[in-house]
Image (spheres, rainbow, N blue to C red):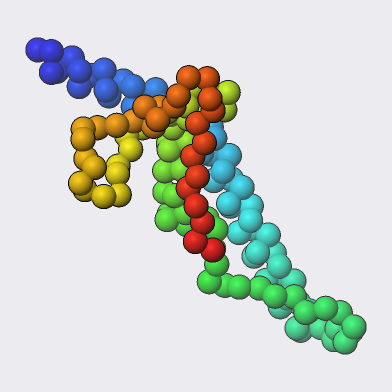
Length: 133
């Protein structure tokens, strides 16, 4: 019976998250649609320009047919991004997440260590992730 109750709680939690994320997602979808609309409008203006005699001083107008913003793939990516942002553990002004540290050499595996295990007293802990650029 407990397993069924946990499943109901998970379903209710997922439904609540969807309701909370829906306004942000719909706003992003409308913005993507508007970007496509502006591209379509630009395409119509380009065709009109080609049919009329335009001035040689006018700058060229570049339009791409292959780059649509309002697609199912882009909407899925936006929804996924909103979900990741909602469930992230790091928040501005909040406590830092204490994630597990994976040592680079397998010989030094002496149990699970966490980032804050390396902090000493009141000294700030600095993490350098490096760069490959």
